[in-house]
Each structure stands twice: as structure tokens, then as C-alpha cells.
Amino acid sequence: MYLKGWVKAWFVISSLVVLWDAAFVLLRPMSFDHPLWQPYKLYITVDLGYGDVNDGFVIAQSWMNLVEVTISTHALILARGSPGSRQMARAMVYALVSSGFTWWKTVLYMGRDVLSGWEHSGHNEMFNWITLYIIPNGIWLVVPLAIMLDVSSQLIRALGDKRKAN
Image 1: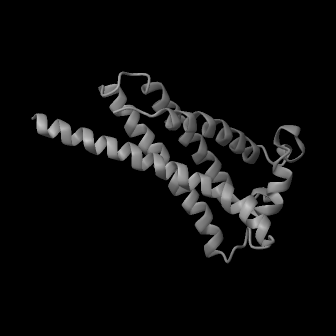
Image 2: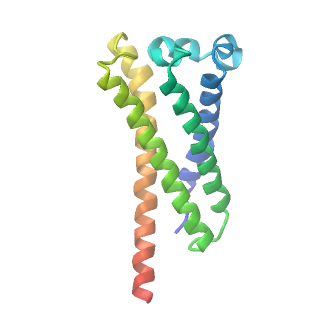
Image 3: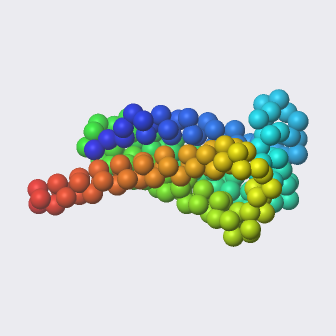
């Protein structure tokens, strides 16, 4: 039982992206014109919630992002243990929790748009909507789901092996 390389890579890369994203949201409106967040000039025209400094949901989601990064980082630190060790088992649990956070947060974020009649993204032309909203947000569904499936199957297998040993 261990965190695979692609899972560790995801946690490192996604944590950097999530920190960048949270900083953009939490520092709005100052971040609107800052060169560090230049790509958001386009994104706030695609997802109107990101441009609305009074959108409490986007702000709350950004605070949740910081909790998610903390859990992912903890998983990475613990994953330095030996495969099959208690420390690695803890890393696996943190990885499962963090991925669950990411997946459900994205489901909730996109669900909010669906249930509001596409209030935040429905104004886009189909090509822009798919390439700039659905695909980027979809990555935050597909990869965490793959991590949850991989980690949970390893944990279940390890629990089964432990049970057979007793």
C-alpha cells in the first residue's frame, strides 16, 4: 500500500494551482489587474461567479481550497513512509479525504451553476463553454475520482489482508 507517483504529482501540481486560485479569489478586486493572475481576465468572462467580488459561495470555496491543500500536503509528508507502514496507511486516508474534498467541492460548484439555470456560465458560446469551463472543471472531477478509486481499493485490499492474518 503506497501513494503512486501520479497521485503525488497531482497533489503537488494541484496544490500549487489551488493556492494560486484561492489567492486570486481572496485578494479580489486587487488581483483583477495583477500580472500574476493574467489568465483570470479571460476566465472571469467565462465563469461570472469568479468576477463577482460579492459571491460568497466562491469565497467560501476558496477557503475550503486552503483546507484541501493542507490535507493534501499532510498526505504527501506522510507518504514518505515505507509502503505498507502505519504512516503510509495514514497518508492513504489523508489522500482519500483530500480527493473527496476536491471531487465534492467541484460537484457542488458545478451543481450550483446547473441548478441556477447556468447563471454563471450559460452566456458562453458552446466552444468556449466546453473548452474554458467544462474541460478545466472536469479535470477536478476525473483525477480526484481516479485517486479515490485507487486509494480506496488499496485500503480495502490491505484491510482484507490484515483480517486474513488475524
